[in-house]
Image 1: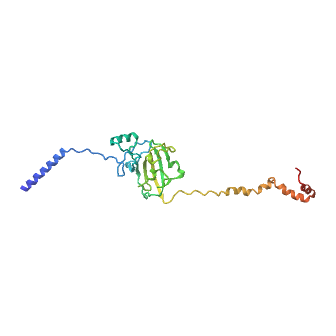
Image 2: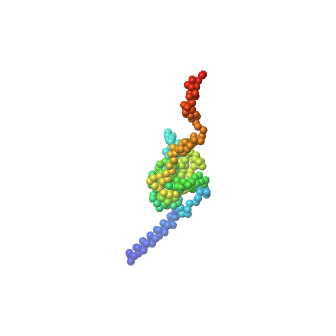
Image 3: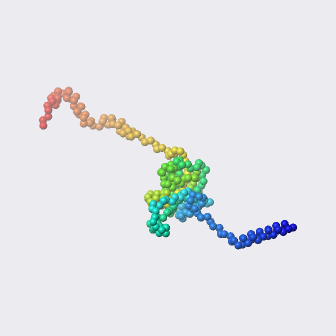
Length: 269
């Protein structure tokens, strides 16, 4: 009986303690995780895009950073208090900055994983942030998918490094900052310092360039061969060349002795 009373009292005391704790400590509001710009899983905040850019499929994941770069500043301020250094840095525009290559996988492929230094066959559409399509493989259907060799520096850095983690058959939207695109160099249809958006599809990858070889061009000697074969008949119908009368005059001179005598006489000046 005594043990039962002790256990009952303990249970009542524990219940009161829990009730007091629940009333004394109000529930904390839920705080959403802050977007991260690092490579860890998490969403990155993207600038608003034009409605001209096609909307992503329903249920598409958020944009993630494939990697983030923070370049080393070309100048370091010394011999000044930290507060003054911050003011000078801001005034001179030498504050540190970072930029990320972000992506959204809109379709996960089922083929082989994209491997380094392979030849990729890609379908693509490139947009400016205002929605302008500046290029697309659909504009060149006769050429088929665009072919590049990964790591060969034949394309912009955002492309050269933007296929990491993709599989053949996959589709991805790439958000490429201008530092990983064309920088301050204007291109056809692309103003300087333009951040770009690409929708890409990895159609295939191979160990060698899949581009069909161009048909061999005919030898250079083949072109003049036709006129050369036609050259012999031409003199038969054309007037005899200038040298022909000289050869024809010799038989005539041999048969007519009087004609040879004047020829032996040297011409007068």
